[in-house]
Image (tube, rainbow, N blue to C red; front, side):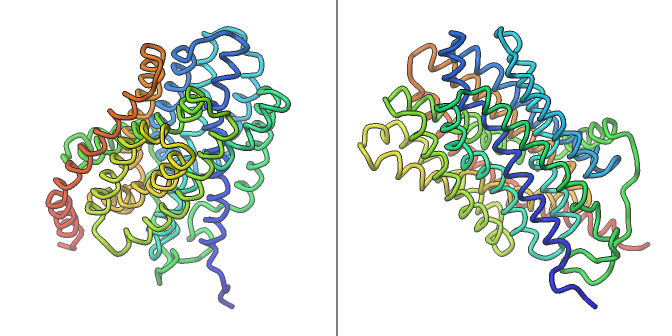
Length: 423
């Protein structure tokens, strides 16, 4: 008897829960900035180095994680990453010197980077033929929404019992996700004798079991010869510079500079998370129906305008920041579904996760550089305003760049279709 619910949706639910929780663990360090400043006397610049390393490695780990999922399996890769995250959160409670922070940041970045976008992209491409855009939208929303929704909880924990208990709670949460991934997530629908959701035939094709490091670098060598790759990676670099590395890492201390307490600032991020869930899921639906490059044009353009408005929003009284939170939240990570769709069109469904891994590395490299640069700007001039304005202008540049790749992707997709025809 055919099951009423395709198992792909059960795997998607487990993946969504893992991504939401992992994103919360990844973003928690932004709530540690002010406690570290108060307890140890470390400057924002010093702490931002660790956060910048964390964000950069979060992205650079992605391509190798995608290759590891091919070679060793999704479950082994994700469970190993969760163990690393748990160890990192326990170890940070013993930190007493500034030089130890980058080690902690690196461990969190590698652990979260081994899950995050690559986990969701791999599951979506392996399990879904139809509704893939919607699923990618949900997974992308999980990466941002989880971080933002959990921040108010972390703020309450830190305010009442301190940052060390919060770190122990994060470690426990990571450990609880291990059984979920071991017993619910399956590698491929063919393991259960099922076709992908929306397909009619079981696809038992398996990728070559090659060295994951060599596979990742071979993909990079091929990608660097593609102009489409450079445009997607460059615009995604700007995406990271205007989201995780800026608002995700520095909105809380920026609010503090204007006399807004941590709990209210975290509430703003949570509101962004709620609207991001709506906006990014809608983006996945739209990317199944409309031109991905035009969607990205509007996403980057509107995000740029919202960041240019942010310095003024602090002076608009009660309504300024909530207006920004709604507008920016809808656009927070809406760029992921259409970017994955463009990468899939350019490089093929089976190889898309690996290529997107390197594109996502550009995203996190931009986020990591901005996380450090914004902290340095604040330390130098006492305000984040210049960082917000520069990121806003970069988004407008990205909006223009994304329109240059339409013909290149069409040519590559045609060439791939010709090559796939039997001789």
